[in-house]
Length: 215
Image 1 (tube, rainbow, N blue to C red):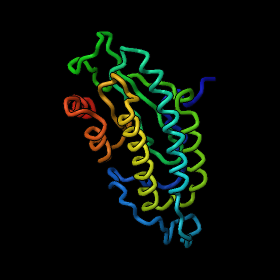
Image 2 (image 1 turned 180 degrees about the vertical axis):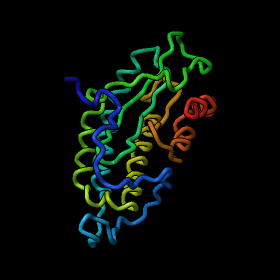
Image 3 (image 1 turned 135 degrees about the vertical axis):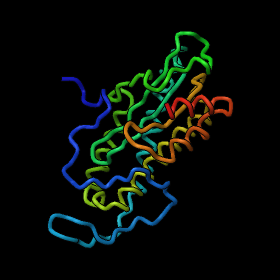
């Protein structure tokens, strides 16, 4: 049976009420507090919960795996685009990468394929530890994640960590000649996607990166 993480994981959604908003505002470092959350037994008061330390540790693992992944990709001159696809559901989603390839090398911006033509890379061999770390946090914060405010802040913090890791790799030239770098979501929107276009791409690459992202 194939590793379930070799495709974008959107299965086995939990039977809890849907708390995701269509567009989460970027996290501005608000204090991680919970007041009341809804359960099948009514409302239960919760103590303060702060996952920041766990997210920082997870971010280090993601950085290590991304650096290793990009090292492999740089050996293929046909790779001209890279996207880190973010989790949309903070109950079972992992992260996964997508790459664009152009047989005409060296790659030119005019030849970057549309996002539908980008290939998913099996994340069981690229982001295995990162996905396991996310699953661990989902289990640890299962009850707080029932709260809409906590869910939103947690998601924003994960997204910020992913953008920070990608930016570190840009700054240290880990992307090499990969011209277009994106954060993507498979079935949602978020302001951080547009922010990533500006932060991760050279000014000359930003128009095509935005065009690819918007389809």
